[in-house]
Image (cartoon, rainbow, N blue to C red; front, side, top):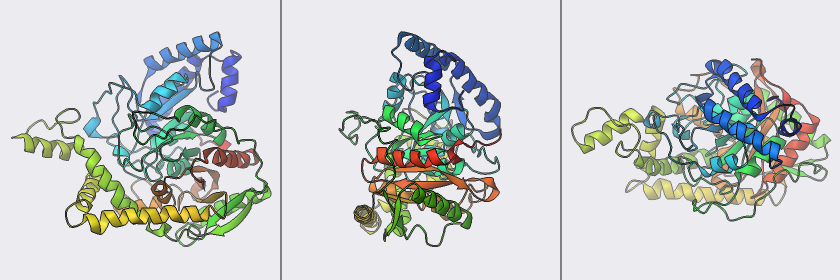
Length: 483
């Protein structure tokens, strides 16, 4: 049943062909059977999941159920969950039990979704491969020798392996879209401020945004509709009326203008990815869309700008983890300063330390103007490029990742090559735009390829509708890896 669409699962629940308790039990059984192979989950919540499922069955019996009532769900372990471990993939928080729920977690509880566990991730969401976790790397369900992408690789792998039908993630520079592409599922990052960051452990506050994973665009629309909404506890949360993100699913593609940035189709994309992306674009043309060339001249500067801005914000955000109030504390130290130094040295992994050092450097006296201010100016130029492009087209399309999933350990010793994995996704975060990745075929080794769709601000419903029309005409999203 978990292999079905959310609509079909909801219909089966209402018709009493299956109960929420049976669904949760099936999901937990799949996790138990498959997690040793791919390491997607760091925590499972059997007792609380079965209790929540029983409550969902009561709502179904009373006729008060919503679209997500009784649906098994996994949360990326960056979202605080009351009474449940929230580790952020780090030794620093390996024993931290949150005393409250993140806003996203609260909303999905209210919607009746059943949390079965918390998923593995790159430590503090810093990574493109899910190899930086204190709990070991997550493996790609299509090939366990390959990465699932990061930092939300655990959530993407859990959905791809059909352990859960939906999962949450976060996207700071591509961390929903890139693992969605590498795992062959659909993932969406909404406009910055659409999903509350309250209770979402911060990496880079001006870039972080919660997102949704599912098999299909239709399922993502249902999940995002439940996740989004204004939250007064988050100063960056936008005051907008609630939206039904499934409203454009039936909208035909006739007349749709798809912009193809010439910078996305230059050197750097592997041939197998290019072939799959071009075939997907040909399918869009068959469905009535037209393609036009656009330009994003500053897109090539997105990587250097991002790796100044994001580490700078991380340096500030992670200063709170000092071993005093919560988190890892060194067992032996001589004085307070020694405790700070040893606790942080022991608690943080290599990639987190690297980004803290970079961020502290670019914010230091004498370098702030030379690096940080210039990066912020580039950020504005990148946003202006997108604004100009959207005067010529309705959505922008291109590859999500320049390659299919690469081997575990293949890029671990070369941080620059690892950072280039996000070359097509980072500019969207810098501009605060919505982006979606959907399956578009397969490349070398039988590994999935993702197509990225980028929309103008608050155009999530259109992106989901465009992807849905493609998925009605193709079956890439319905294919699952062999267990």
